Length: 447
Image 1 (cartoon, one colour):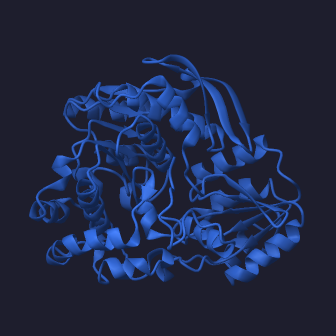
Image 2: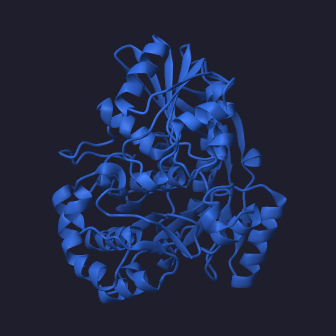
């Protein structure tokens, strides 16, 4: 099965990508063969890394960055690999809490470029090879690796992790992973490895049965976690999420994460449970767990900013489950009103289901086209406005800069909620000069 073509010279509009790799027009293909062969030619860096591997429909990036923040705080040198990026390609490659500099990243890319070209790697395959090679060259003690798409045939599935996890399963990428939740669950369960503990915060009994079946087939110890059973006294406000967490290794602990939302308590619970299964030399003390959770940074996830007296909420929700988490967070926060939704969705997403729950919370909405969206995946804001007419006062502004201006004017001293895609949130952060890191900076991006 082929995925839609993805070019190296255009994703997310960062010119650094063109300096790292030559443009590659080949499509993204299922399978690990090319990635494996390229890594073999580089001395198998993935075999030399102690890894944690995290998949799932939503929340896998939050779990990945939380794990990295705690392990950093525990004194380990940690490599954190996430995707996609919001504004800078460098966001994907973090070592010791700091994104690799442009010069360092280009230097590592020079070392893998021949393999990328020789084996015809696609964009994400090339990025995965670069990340694994970079972490070995940077001398990390442990690497925390986020799955790109699915799991079984994702390029990151070449790693041999100490612990793996799937956050949850929801409908997304149905064209690639299957059109039922059970089919998607099987693809995501493909990151299980023999003898490697596998955890999930999914609670649907049917999907847990799928996971249990795969775990039995590959002889992976299976540890389902019900967040409602380990999280208590939950408090969500604009400063983050505070709760009491019952752990096997550290007992009952009071924790806080600056990531906002009830779903972030579930993500943190899963991350902490993964830490409990690490070898003794990597397992953090309780003070590192608490401090690491307190210090995690993952931009674009219910991120609240005040700009020139106006409130902005940025969230990369790009599927129905993500929007449901976003509106749950909106319902829990005392955001300044009125609330205006600024939305740009990719055309292959189920925006007919995504938009109504958000619009029911909003005074009005502005639909737009994120400028970094690939041309073949662009949606029609006008079509969407006509389809959901009546749920909110809707305006269509194809020009992204104009859409931001209109949304801010409509909100006045209230709140603009920017959502629908990582492209939309990343573009808005650029316009407002709120990028997670500037291209000239080598500063920290994670906890």
